[in-house]
Amino acid sequence: MEQYKQEFIEFMLESHVLKFGEFTLKSGRKSPFFMNAGGYVTGAQLCKLGEYYAKAIHDNYGLDFDVLFGPAYKGIPLSVATTMAISRLYGKEVRYCSNRKEVKDHGDTGILLGSKLNDGDRVVIIEDVTTSGKSIEETYPIIRAQADVEVKGLIVSLNRMEKGKGSKSALEEIRDLYGFGTAAIVNMQEVVDYLYNTPYQGQVYIDDTIKKAIDEYYRQYGAV
Image 1 (cartoon, one colour):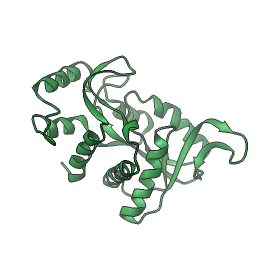
Image 2 (cartoon, one colour):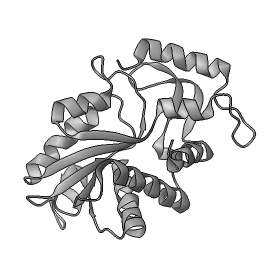
Image 3 (cartoon, rainbow, N blue to C red):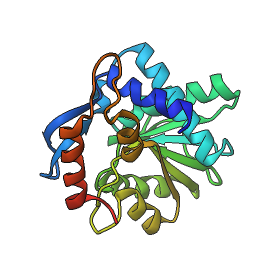
Image 4 (tube, helix red, strand yellow):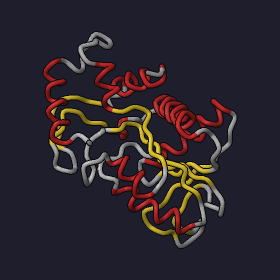
């Protein structure tokens, strides 16, 4: 596993963003783990988060793109932090763009904030996590309605590796439906492999009990 992936797993724990126990998801599923990107709240956290996203984008899509699009609301700070990190780490300038939930009819009008989208732009979409693909269903038509752009891919922080609407994972369903790549900084299998019965800062986050609960969860909800 790449070093930055190991560091990112530790970063999620330190930021209290990745938790283990019993959680009821929006889908109604009872999950033994939960990831909440809303837990990144400080400047230092957002700075580091942007760097992890930047490295994952570089590894999966390269830097041959023009715009990083972050769907409202959580995608807005993600896109800003990551464009800054791409500039800082790689000396590459990309523009950030996000959508508004409601169209603004005065001043800086329209549905977009940040950069406008232009014909020929190559776009990478950035999100925190994708469980069902619903966000992309809403986001993709907005992007396509603005200009004739090429969507190169979607990047999320954690691939939960569970079924979307069918038997495949949500990321696989998005890839098959829209024809662009999907990737994550880390997937849940990498998290389990790294943390199982291995203490971090004096605590074992995935012991035999949690590991059994995760295995049972994936027997029911794991993607084929």
